[in-house]
Length: 136
Image (cartoon, rainbow, N blue to C red; front, side, top):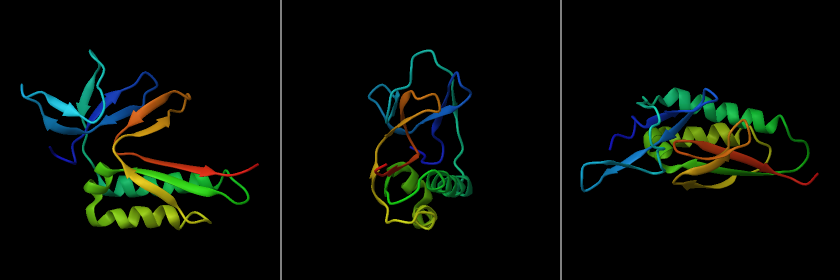
């Protein structure tokens, strides 16, 4: 399956949820990492290396600007994002680490669970989820 053409699912809040196709089933149906709701609108997205790298800078800057004191950065990066970025994946990790005061811990994952802007929990693909754990 092409790593640079995931599916986008339009959401009511004008955002998109990405689904990575990973295989063809026995009946030639496309199998994705996470479910695609029945009767939803989907479209084919086109991956762009610079956009992904820019977003890694943005998320690190946003997180670090909201916390004071010591914290533990916890990063979950989608394995399909790493596969897409190939040699540039190291740059993404550097983008994040260079904007944080403490060493990043984390893992590559298949499907990242994160809240949307309205607080709803959603499974994501091709995403970077960064949390800063700290004591108040």
